[in-house]
Amino acid sequence: MQELNPERSRNTSLADYEWHEHAVKDPEEVAAMVDMSIRNSTERRKLGYFSCATGNPIDDCWRCDKKWHRRRKRLSTCAIGFGRNAVGGRDGRFYIVTDPSDHDPVNPKPGTLRYAVIQDQPLWIVFKRDMVITLSQELIMNSFKTIDGRGVNVHIAGGGCITIQYVTNIIIHGISIHDCKRTGNAMVRSSETHYGWRTMADGDGISIFGSSHIWIDHNSLSNCADGLIDAIMGSTAITISNNYLTHHNEAILLGHTDSYTRDKMMQVTIAYNHFGEGLIQRMPRCRHGYFHVVNNDYTHWLMYAIGGSANPTINSQGNRFLAPGNRFAKEGKENGTIGTGDHKET
Image (cartoon, rainbow, N blue to C red; front, top):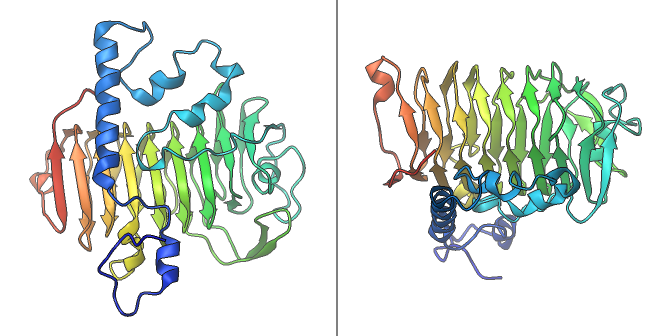
């Protein structure tokens, strides 16, 4: 396997590089691909090629199809950035969630969301109707799953929320996630063949832990016990796009700690998100890796918008900032590499 970092320390094992096998060698190349995709989509809108065109390449990929509900899996071709290869449950069958209950996290009932996400085969998960799902414990996902909330109004609220741990190829689209609580000290199933004891979860809306090829798109998140979206412990190949985040202190954390150097290979695209009212900080807060923050809308944060430590590379392009009145919340401090690019329409 080709090393991603030629300056390998004496204490670095092969396992450290296997952990990051999904990172790309040249993240600037991926950022340039995103830039080109945005420019092309914007030009098509200006030229009037499609009456439905928005200039957002993700939305234009599937929303222009009036029969998208019959071709749901086409969504898996629409991601941009580092999470663009996340296929989710594209290669599996559809699974329809019919039951919002979650009474038994070890032996979940067929028809529930928990039953769907623990299956070992790929699944594209949809919902029969509007529902509010209050999870008794964190929802631990298995690999190759799509949670697709388009066409219905689905809330995960008031209980445990989503954990993506040591898995790959996850798409979460069109869900409202809010009021997540700390759960744990309980047995929870994570696959068809395994369940185990879970200590207390932090209460993140979406927790990404040691995972890769993840796409989080068009969700609304607010008011959780810890973070709204956290990606830590060697996670990489992630795109977080088109989400609406409000009413929270620490919005998005990318990177475990300053001393956790495996996150040097973390690569995340943050695109077309609206960081709305009631947010305080971490939009995102980055450590070690490469972060492309492009075409996001920031309105009235209370402490700071984008932050980092442990020498991250933050490529900030085309974002719109409506700063608060507090002058201290407008300051910029560099602790890493920060790049800025041309404005693009949001």
